[in-house]
Length: 352
Image (cartoon, rainbow, N blue to C red):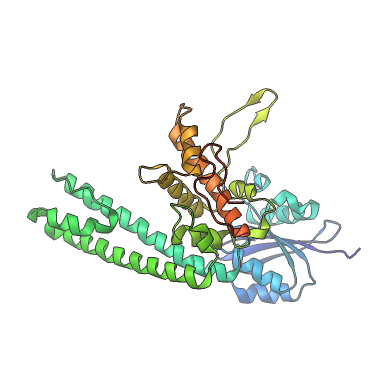
């Protein structure tokens, strides 16, 4: 058998700590590298093909792709799953790198490997994440304007975020205009830029990702959610069954079962936070006053009718989980979605 060396990388924003083990588990090299493509290329290009382990993070995507292009096999560890690293009394970057290498040598599955999306998908996803940054900034500005007006006894009219600037400007007392008008102008400008992003997302989905059309058959799923879903999952064949998408996106409950005790716990919230938030938003629309009658809505209403603490919230999360499964099924099967199917049984709604 060909013997490999095992490399653990503790990735930092400025530097990486490297630990190299031989096939027998002995440390053969420790190295600190600058966090640049040139430094990584110079070090790993002179090394025989090795197994490399690093934790998922800001830089893990491009680093893993660069090392794979150099002939190495890279395992990206899920940080939340590797408790042995961060739950120690004596934790430092050097020992973290060694522990990653030893876990990789023992069994790569101990690292709960994650798979990064392709570079093209990541670039397109940046547009969606940039839009989300503007939405969050607009929300903070609107809340600030409302709060400042309230501090002087004025309540601005209820309004959708997209039309807030115009309606608030019309109702703003003259006394507050010098202080708050610049903020309203900024809110209006941000709304314009968000609309520009929406047009760009619509065009990108239509021209480069035609598979999003199959996902948009479901009420409550627009171009933004469909494109974010396709770009985040990247390759639908990575899941053998559509039901595996729910746990992948952190929409399944945690488990703590022992003997007769089986606790009801919150969802894991692992995976992509932004896509999970979009799916929950779509589920809220399905369950809301404007959601059309469909199998998903019927399924959620039956869960909510059970009552109990936070029954409506649990139902929304359950609908989001079923929606994630349904979108994957529509993607791989390219079948027509029948919203009426499952009205009584809570089926997925994919036509046979």
